[in-house]
Image (cartoon, rainbow, N blue to C red; front, side):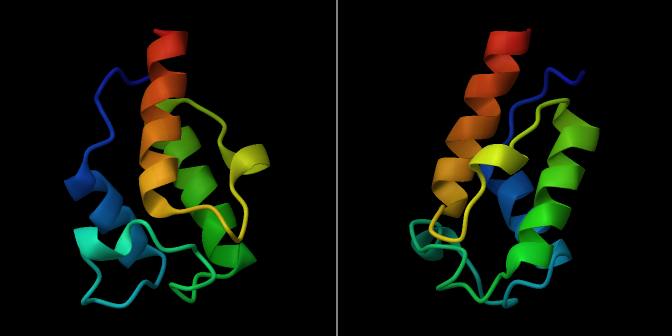
Length: 83
């Protein structure tokens, strides 16, 4: 399990890796995954990558109306709880 924090930079890289618009930035992180055109397949890929890198399972809580900023907080909270 990694102890590294899930930063805004990590979040942006992850979103880009799963097909987010290249112009995405911090102003967009409060928008839902649906609003960002990231479908269930993209969310599953996000959850898998987070599990692999941070050792936490976010898939059960990652829904269409979830936001990237909420995801970042969730990952950091779960990682801290598992440390």
